[in-house]
Every structure is written in structure tokens, then in C-alpha cells.
Length: 126
View (cartoon, rainbow, N blue to C red):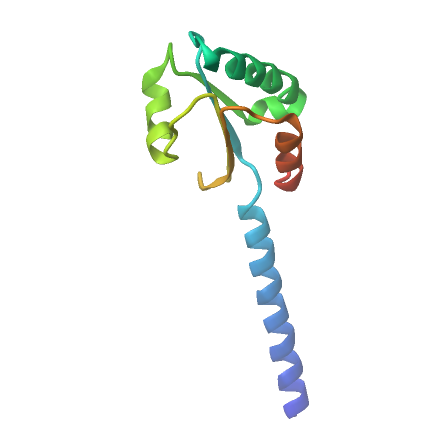
């Protein structure tokens, strides 16, 4: 009788452990990508903004387009400010990958490398 109880307890433990792993995996899935840019960038930041805009336009097409929330700091500052405060942004452009609970999974600020974005989207299922 003891062997049967240990078997059932073992199966229950593995089930709980499996559920915890699946829950953790779901938590690290990309739910939203916030891109904050500046339409009126000038000087040294203009090239970074232009390159990042091109990257975002190329990367977020098809199904990925639904993940993207694009905010222009110069025309919609009110929408950008909460993200700037929450994620302590001191430079734009910024690309922030968030999970379903709005926890930051990854962020790129300033110069954004296409390879980095592609790798992170693949890592987080985006």
C-alpha cells in the first residue's frame, strides 16, 4: 500500500512541477513590443532614429505587426512618458519587449542591432 501512495504522490509532484514550468514559460512570452521614437530627431540622434525606424518597419510585418505599439515622443509625449519613467529611459529610440504582465523581457536603447532584435524575438516567441 505504501508503494501506491508514493507513486501517486510522485505523479502529483511531477504534475505540479510541470505546471510551474509551463506557467514560467508563458510568462516569458512576448506580449507587446513598445517602440518609442522621435520624428523630430536632429544632430547625432537623427541617424540612430532613422536606422531604428527602418529596422522596426522591416521586422514588424505580418503577424508581428500586432505586437508593436509605436509611440512618437515628439507628437504623443503623454503616451511615451509612462514608459520613459517605468523603464528609466534616458535616450531614444527605445525598443522594449514586454510579457503579458508588462514585465520587461529585453530592451534596446539608441542604436538597435537587427540581429539582437531577431534573436530576442525568437527567444521569447515573437
